[in-house]
Amino acid sequence: YGSIKISAQGLSVQRQRMELVASNLANLTTTATPEGGAYRRRQLIVESIPKSDFESSLKDAMTSDHDDLIMGARATSIRLDQAPLNMKYEPNHPHADDKGYVAYPNINPAVEMVDMVNVSRSYEANISAIRSAKSMLTDAIEMLRS
Image (cartoon, rainbow, N blue to C red; front, side, top):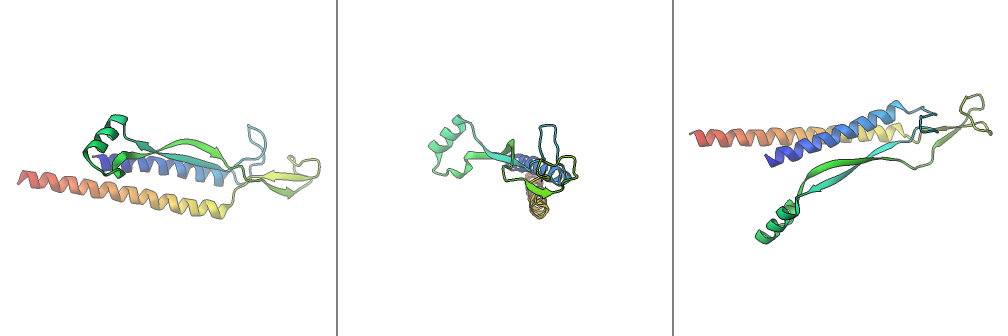
């Protein structure tokens, strides 16, 4: 069941990443936000989930294999991309500065589309891993019955 749990955590992370990609694309032309200024590209920060200290110590004492010390992944925060905003000369725009420039979000639609494909493939890989684990569990149960 551990592999299914890890894949489920991966699905959750990929869903959150897809929501941010969708938000970034939806705000491609947002020049004013409640926080002030133009919308900034959002990125999800993800970290591994380590086993508890006791589990890690027990694993170290019993084997020399340290690859199994991670129990999955989780999203920890959303980071605003600090890349410079795109400045366009539009003196008649209501959000133009004194020189007539408007700050547009620092979002590249091509990068967002690549991220969307990446997230989609990662999501599919996690679904495939869950299906494989389910199939193995089903086969094991059938072998125990016979």
